Length: 302
Image (tube, rainbow, N blue to C red; front, side, top):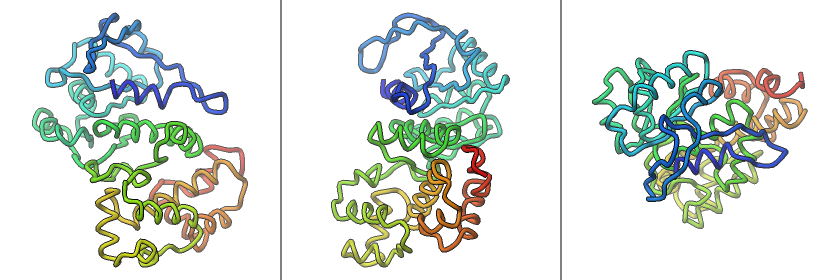
């Protein structure tokens, strides 16, 4: 039921200002479907509904150790063959593996079952530490709340940072966690880290993104040594201060490119890069395209 709640929260209605999705739950046997909460969920749509879907997400199910029915595997394969995006998170990934869609690809799943996935499907390159992995038209995500990260990544990829950030704000979620971030965190997200001092420093950094923000300054504000700060930061967020700041700068740059007509040079300074050339270098390396090309993908601004 957590997985159903996640996809419903992300792809359900969010008001007229955000894209609306024709969201449907499907099953190979329509009718009451048992859930892990003991409350059955009535699903009216069968697998034929997948024939017109642009995005198909395989959700976790209790019997994942046994391959799904052949009709399910055929429907997943047919969706992929006609160009749909096909995704799964947690043990829903086992359905994609059983359909052969992950052969020769990288994939992740809940860290608890990563070894089982690798053992049952040796043709899949399992990366147990990743939050999610984007292989183009096939995406996989880790367990539980990492489903939010996968779905928000899909929104960000297809509709841009502004839409993904708006949906994340609506759901009171962090706007972006990088797919390479570790699954198992002492505390799942920095905004909710339970460490008041660290949370205040992170909030200050977000409000002062235009500044250089060296780790020494962040550590000073946290009243820690650089080494202690870095260790505590990584334990709370699953990533380093440098990586967190880089992702924050790039995410902010994405939103400004999508929602404003500010020159790239101005955007670079607003998000803490010394020049447009530095922003361009980071953007190409981390996003695969230069800032101006990214802007053209989401706006009519040259």
